[in-house]
Amino acid sequence: MKQCTLDVTAAEPFNSYDVVAVTDVDFSFWLEEDSNADAELISIAGFPAAQFHIKGGGTHDCAIAVGVAENQHLHIEMLPLSDDVTGDEICQGSRQAAEMALQTLQTLR
Image (cartoon, rainbow, N blue to C red; front, side):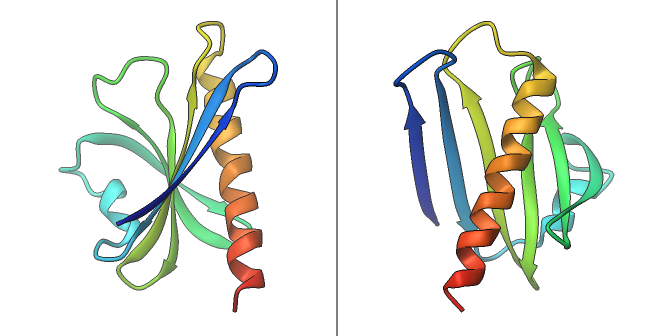
C-alpha cells in the first residue's frame, strides 16, 4: 500500500502524519465487533469514516479510516513526537489531516 508521511519538526509540538491508501479493505472493517479497535462512525468532509483507537494502544493512539470507494479507504493518523500531546489533540490532528487529504484527493479527479 502507498504511504505518505509528513514530519512537522520546525517547532513544538513535533508531529508526524501518515496517510495510507488502503486498496483492499473497506473502512467499515474498523467498526466490526471483532476488530482489534474501539471505533465510532463519523463523517469527514461528507465521507463516511471510522475514528478508532487500537485496543491496548494507550493514550497516544487515534486514527481515522475514511471510506473513499468500495473496499478502499484512507488510513490517516497523527503521531505525536512530543510527550505533552493529549489524546484529544491527537484525534483532532488526525481529523484535520483527513480533511486535508480528502481536499487534495478531490483535486486529482
